[in-house]
Image (cartoon, rainbow, N blue to C red; front, side, top):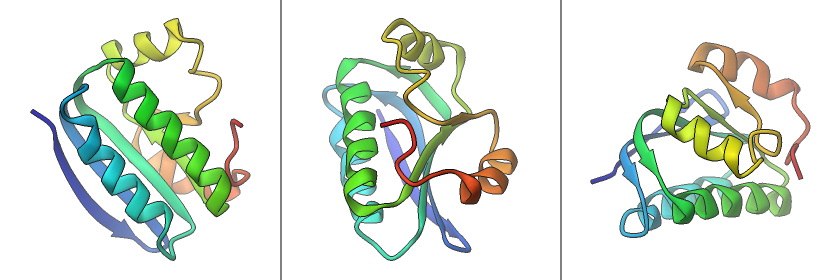
Length: 120
């Protein structure tokens, strides 16, 4: 079961996700990303520290967020990936497509200096 919670820190939306991001739950994450990427914030971060499992539909959802960030000219990144999620991204060779930070402090500090839609 996936839990998605939204919070804002200055001009950055942080989407807190915890649980499993799979075929059945990835729509929750997608809805939150679409909402925030179409809002007035400059950046959207996905907090993955609580994600215990991610499958191909979860990865597709994250890619959709990255593509939408390009359309809306917003910055987009991930942080706090656990071993499983990081391995899945690495296997799919997407660890070089997404901007990934270790923790929230680093992500919030560095995302303003990234190019919008970096990675695509």
